[in-house]
Length: 82
Image 1 (cartoon, rainbow, N blue to C red):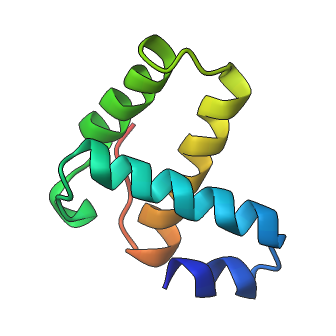
Image 2 (image 1 turned 120 degrees about the horizontal axis):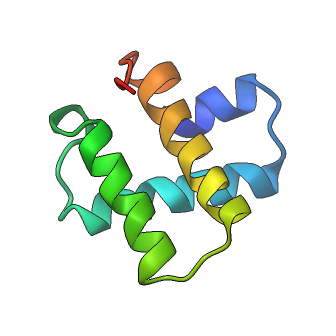
């Protein structure tokens, strides 16, 4: 469903691959819990983990956040508070 949403919106193939990768990493980080069971706190802890443990740049964190927002807002039709 994520890939279909990205393709309908004409995202590039490389962006599609990266967004899918970010969602997979998010799910793996939270031990494969379903995204509907999680919310803003889990997204925040994942992004914090990326910054502190992964030492990724701000632009990389923004890309991960964009991927997760697309997952929640456009695929699952849920709004994350905050």
